[in-house]
Image (cartoon, rainbow, N blue to C red; front, top):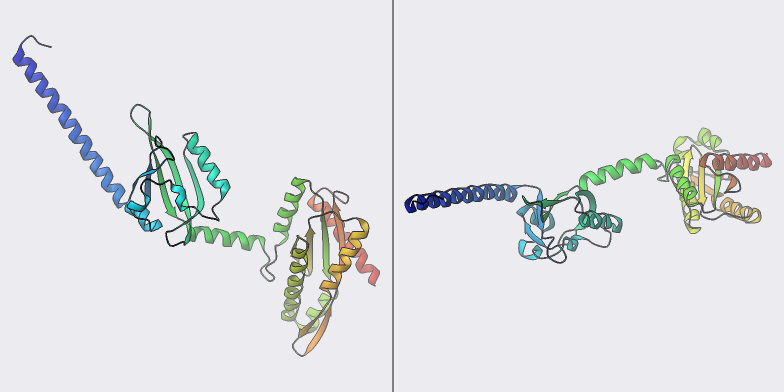
Amino acid sequence: MSSNPGANYREMVVHVQNNSLSLDSLYQEYQKLAAVIEHLHTSVVLTDPHTPDNPIVFINPAFTTLTQYTKEEAMGRNCRFLQGEDTSRETIEKIKTAVSRHESITVELKNYRKDGTPFWNEVRISPVYDEDGELIYYIGLQADVTERRHYQDSIQYHATHDELTGLPNRKKLMETVKAHLTEKKPFTLLFIDLDSFKEINDTYGHLAGDDVLQKTAGVLEQTAAAGGGSAARISGDEFVMLLPSSLGEDESIVCVDRVQKAVTQTVQLDDTTVQVEASIGASRFPEDGTTFEALLRNADHAMYRAKRSKA
């Protein structure tokens, strides 16, 4: 610093003025940023990672629009107050892990508005650091993606379910069987084929045939559910039932007989009635195969043996 007191004073004034200008500029930038965040249609939340339970320290009006909670109701609380009974525990654990590692994460989870209405919330969480690299906040961006989620669920449902009967289709059956194979737990497949279904279609028409298929599907679904299993329609008049236990030979005979009796029914078609019966074959994991294809093929072969024995 100069030995001239006047010069020293002028330097100090300039330094203070420059700092003042710098602070003014920073404040103006902050005001601009705050105004932008306030007017965003996306919900913005800031939480304080240095306070126990990572409480909310800022929300914008879009958060209130999304959740119905006011600033006074949200401030100081952890964001978990938006969660509920059907919120995925697995997704919550993913969020906790990312936050503990100071990592960014994007998830979709079911949240609840103040009035209890559920909605699918797309949440993007990121750490915020200062110029020295110190963690100062977590920022969360939230958006209601319920409509998109329902659309995706609808597409997924139609891709894995039979349109006529509402039962799982072959693709869904394969996914279910492969999941059981991965768990390496014994189970039984029943292959069910309706007898004389072509004659019903040819004689009474396809609408009558559809009616028979729907009624059969309902019976199989109820019967499978009673045994802790599931039923699927894989094509035409062919159905498959999965039972989550491996049956012995005698038990298989009893099970097939039980399903046979359930499927055998008299169906009213306009002014006439038809008798519906089925041929059934069984395969067991792991005795009769260790792949979906092998188990289905062996159950199919057993079904045809049963059908030929009736001829």
